[in-house]
Length: 60
Image (cartoon, rainbow, N blue to C red; front, side):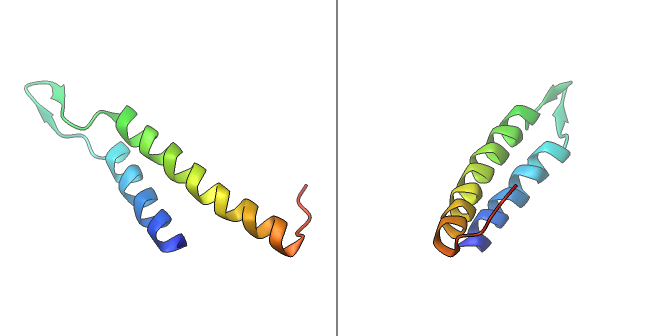
């Protein structure tokens, strides 16, 4: 469950860090990596929110 989310987080972070260019054009634009990271963080946040409600964890 969390492992899948963290693997996707890793790939999104890697897409942001890697800079492959062919004739000055970036093959992996950073925006794709950032969008991927936002989707993964939303997925992981939904899992954490479930745990907070399930175990009545108080957050500030």
